[in-house]
Image (cartoon, rainbow, N blue to C red; front, side, top):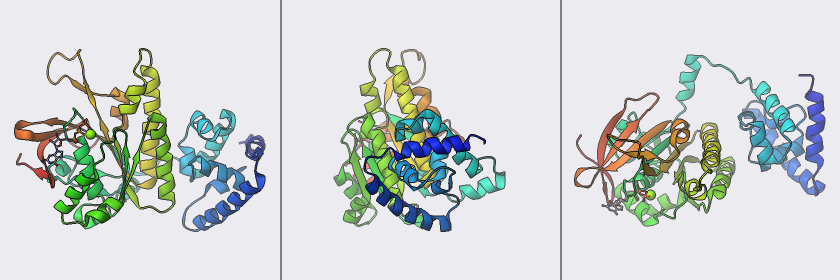
Length: 357
Ligand code: GTP
Ligand code: MG
């Protein structure tokens, strides 16, 4: 890398264009202290990158990037957008982070070890948990539930927000939930009912769910950075719910010729979601609406919004629909490691209840 020095210059130039240098220095000093502390238990940090000084670290942190991995997984355009730097500088910083991280292959055994760190979160229904491999949704992955209105997507979300708080041996992850609500459908009284249904203290359960209303797709994207900040500040968040993933994108990019834009932004958002999930060992549950597909002549003509972009980004996809006698049918689709299968459950006042399959 003979260009490391030129990149050093460029990078420090960029970071020196700071109006309030003394304030910047103070922040930087704090950051250095924190980073120095972190260094003892973790591997290389942002501060260890050639050409990245304390001021640079402060700027990266302000853009929501705290670790080498956070930097390494970005694209130059992405970083340039987030941190307001030139694409060339961004590219060099990312390359340096990748080089330092030794991003490459790990053997299957190490991979298996890594997977042991995963947490699982019960949905509250044994049937649905079994459909998902036995223990519910898992961390470091995105689980999507799509279906028509009233199919149970939000009820499942609320049940998960309670489930995540359970101790590990009871099917939870001993953590908190973040609920990003795009449509104002979060219902504390439903959480109360679910909590009481399992004999938990409803006030405590509600306190462990951090709810934010996202007013548009930009806001929805920004909230993701905020979640990363909360985790960094020590909040033991193990579940992030986005209800709904697609509604804002769909409403804002509805005109003719806007589809490509919408898909591109959705794609970026999903990538960021996955990154936050992987870096923080977090489960992500997203809901998605359906539309009818006039091209489909046989079978169920409903299709998830967002098409392949969403389909490929989500690790597990569940299709929810109303079944007989007010039951809900939950079907697993295209899972990387589980058979396509379906099951049924009921939505009751005090929680989800299983039906015999
Ligand atoms: P949209 O957000 O509109 O797309 O739908 P959704 O899939 O999120 O629907 P949701 O999960 O909110 O499900 C709503 C349904 O859950 C209702 O139609 C009821 O059948 C059921 N439900 C909600 N609250 C209760 C309750 O307190 N008791 C019972 N028994 N059922 C409930
Ligand atoms: Mg809903």
